[in-house]
Length: 251
Ligand SMILES: Nc1ncnc2c1ncn2[C@@H]1O[C@H](COP(=O)(O)OP(=O)(O)O)[C@@H](O)[C@H]1O
Ligand SMILES: [Mg+2]
Image (cartoon, rainbow, N blue to C red; front, side, top):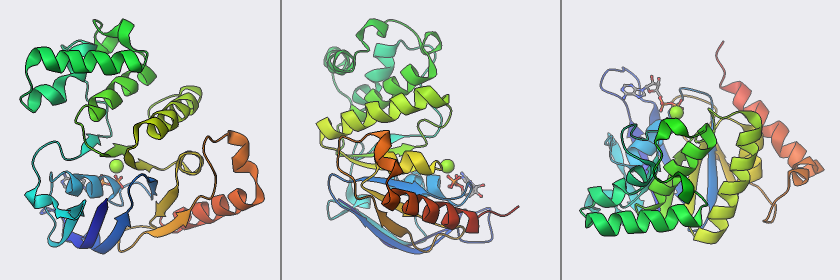
């Protein structure tokens, strides 16, 4: 589905590379979490996939095509902060990607309404983002990401601003959607439990520059329960993840 081939990147303002000769592959249908210390360049990986930044070296392929040759809408990107537009209703926020693609307004609203209904958000459609709780806003933001129509979704710490309980129910909600929608997901988090609960595989990096991801397979079936995380295998992986993360922490 996605391939990074020898990607190096630095921001113009910075002297040092934050991504150096990085290669990795994501297979169709996977749910992969990227875990790493704050500031190491995880969001930058997403910005490269979206062509918001260009690599200094290397190529990125989506379904075996160089992303440079792809047109708008090839990827669904949910950035770190919920970027719902305050003066648009929930329905108007949701339909935005279709409108941007040049879809007929009526059709765009119709498609957005359908997905809001499917996600149990229909009753909020004429409300504004300020009227919704954090969890609800993230759900709307997710519908917007889905309406790009892309097969691959990039979710950048979507639940990090939510309270603990809402966060747990959002994780379950997301897994349910993922298993029904046949999408490939790349998910950034710094929460080890969240990564274990959600993912087929975890990519972990211990700091800057990112040279490679250590890949950890999470050998649990779906649907998942929290209890599955207490098995000896999972506790071992959890310990490993935490010690990898600690290596990257600079106090
Ligand atoms: N648009 C930008 N311009 C310049 N530097 C940036 C930009 N975005 C991020 N950085 C820098 O690049 C580094 C990695 O950032 P980021 O990818 O956001 O890390 P992470 O998501 O892992 O916390 C940070 O040191 C950050 O300050
Ligand atoms: Mg980030």
